[in-house]
Amino acid sequence: MKQFFLIITALALVMISGGRVSKDIIPGAIWPDNKGVHINAHGGGILFHKGKYYWFGEHKVEGEKGNQAWVGVHCYSSKNLTNWKDEGIALEVITGDPGHAITEGCILERPKVIYNRKTKKFVMWFHLELKDRGYDAARSGVATSDRITGPYTFMKSFRPNAGHWPLNVKDIHQQPVGDQVKDKYCGGKGCLPGHPDTVNLLGRDFQGGQMARDQNLFVDDDGKAYHIYSSEENSTLHISLLTEDYLSESGKYIRVFPGRYMEAPAIFKYQGNYFLIASDCTGWDPNAARLARAPDIFGPWEELGNPCIGTDAELTFHSQSTFVLPVQGKKDAFIFLADRWNPKNAIDGRYVWLPVQFDENGIPLLKWMDRWNLNFFSKK
Image 1 (spheres, rainbow, N blue to C red):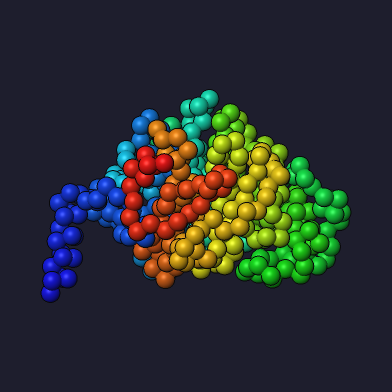
Image 2 (image 1 turned 90 degrees about the vertical axis):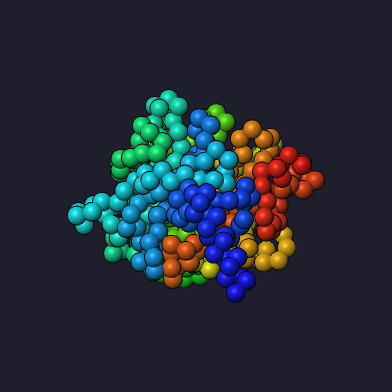
């Protein structure tokens, strides 16, 4: 009875305040917005603009149906990263037009938004799978808006870098494609008949464009923007420079970690080095995070192992990376953002946010914390 009373009291406090009652970040917990509703922005990313953080993510619905897109991309805003205001749907899926690329029931994942200072446009990229085709489309979608909260206008979808070889292309890729190359994705690592270079997936997709699934965006200090995505049947990551307007691929890109089956990439920059946190390919099930470092975004990249430390480190604390956020106003302060997926009831996915720590050699570390706040970075 006492436990029931405590639960009811906590819920009442949330409703009275219109959102969180704590200034702390509690990884894996229900995270109410200003309306008292759990934040619905999965696989998301955050953009800081004019004194506010804006969180964009997949809007899920209940049950397994929530693994498809029936609403669109949700947006929230915050000044302190703990209390979030519901800003509504930034990009709506299309209803009444089953042939549209982002018709309701498509798969729209990992939306990220960046701001182009030259064009004054907000640009959203996302991983798109066409309705009723499973995961075989492997396309990138682009939408733009004059306002950060939207509405965003869908521009196009495509496979990246059609007709372009990567900077580190191998001779084997430019040879005729053999009959042993599979046309269909068979569902995970280990299903291809050999190393991806030997079956030449890159050459197979040269004309039509490279496959692009789990994806992210990164804007460097010089304003250049990059698209990072899982390609070649998820076996290899691509890092691709975008055009100056951020709307297209420039054709300049590299292949990294061939045959390693990396997904969920998140890039950030610390003390002149580029760091990448990603995961293995195990479907919805969590696995050990992977950390890599490079002196230049185009490499060479070096794997550094699992950055997680402690209980359940081999499962990335039961989550998967989605973004690394630089904290404004605090030097060398970063937050690791990850999702706990719940494919049986997608709307109940939870968020794991942890401060990025660094060892004496400047290598990022992720340690579990039950509760923390931004004062953590003041203690460094």
